[in-house]
Image 1 (cartoon, helix red, strand yellow):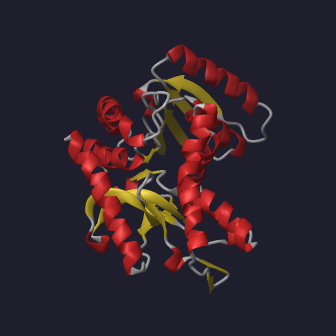
Image 2: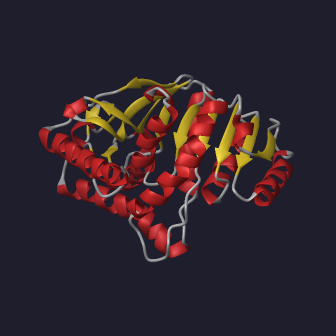
Length: 301
């Protein structure tokens, strides 16, 4: 089981380290613009994996070395400049970056599952579909997975139920137009009642990533773990239900844009696209998110 990580920066290396610790991949290839750094990271990680019971081969390479990868994770990005906290400011430059690498990835690893981490992730996931020609089952962005986990942590403290036992999702855009799907939130078969206080937790969760970025200059652990979570579900065929950025094809009247919805992830990539029964307010929030993401896509075209 081979995984290629394009962009072995802070997020990419948290992802690589997590895959080594969990022993779910047998080979990890690090592809970066700075080959010396990628090789240094690979050597360091090989020394770390020697402490693990399950051996994992880690090496540096270029995009051609992604051949035969089961999963290719794209973490590469231009840097976010100090003082900018809108992911969409990265859209143009990261879109140009994707044009240089994604067609080649599709050529050398035509059967891989593509996991996009690069921001703005909804826009980049849509672009990846256009550049690779892959079916929507094999292209997914990390989307609101991290946002949903943050929301569950906050909600858990409020209602005193372990976050693992909460079925509560943040949907829509990984950005300003995300929203909590409270109409379908539940724990143990019991509905989690909607309230202004609980919706306020979504606003808090929405800004936590920016808060971390403002304080330490990056976010890496939670997003790296989220990518590892997705990849593990693919490699081990776990059939996990997670909110990911995927191509929406008619749900609530939305088409040709990528937004986060619950999907079932397994060996084939996205095994099922779920359609939660949102109330009308949430449905309109989903449509507004689609308009916002579509506007960024149109600005690139």
